[in-house]
Image (cartoon, rainbow, N blue to C red; front, side):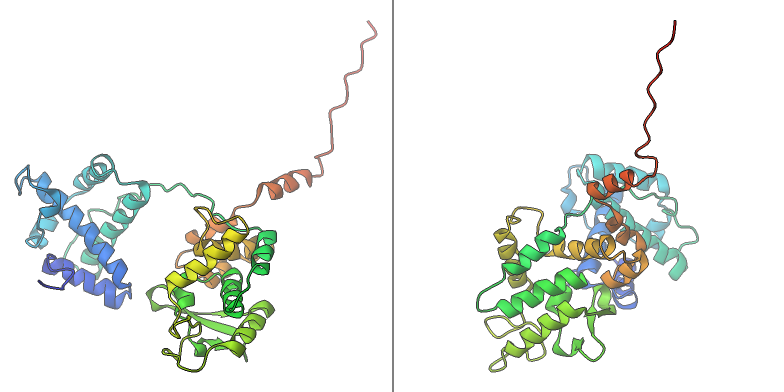
Length: 332
């Protein structure tokens, strides 16, 4: 059996996947998602055009015969029908359909603007399904302080440092796990974070982070460590795993009654962003760089304000105390 994950992909799709993986620097997981999205699209197109038996299992439709001539016949109306198929037949939610639109856009943009194989982009006017911007869950300042106060045990310095970095730097789980010793620069008070697509960014460390790092490094295991470069070490003397970090965070969140669904490592990232924006009044563009977001639109979700802030804003209006005078009684 071949171990090639794209063994069913025709040459034209393989070329695209190679482009986004090497030139655009997308992660293997993202490349795989693009492929699966395109495979679903071309399976639908073959079924819609009667190129396979009607009773065939959708998941068994092969796309290895898709070529440029086939792709040239695709128009926007057919793509609209595909989007309807995703919503009604596949029961795909808005987020999933939005991602599939993004995959199609990238693929046809590559064929039109990057390689010139298509003279016209059929999905140029394709709109992305509107996502409801849910406010991210986050911890209040008081809950953050309570969370930090609960950290104890034989790995207290390590665990305290991990949660402090999450709450102050807003890094992702994968970013924290992959930190190396030489990523920490005390001389410049910065830490180098490698984010999505291997993009590096420098984030400044505040006093709390520096203090937590120094206390952890003073007790960090040295003997028998397997991954000597890794910043955070597990009980097995290896680089700490994402699963272990998730366990640590969930354990302490549960101690402050936030162990239910919706609270996780990623919520600490949300918390850092929210606290920086609401309490530190950090500019949204600076926040974008700190979090390593590619688009400003992703960062804008953190510009929400609490009900308490909105109430305070309403009361601060200089007209807030002005009331209508009572109507004077008529002398009639």
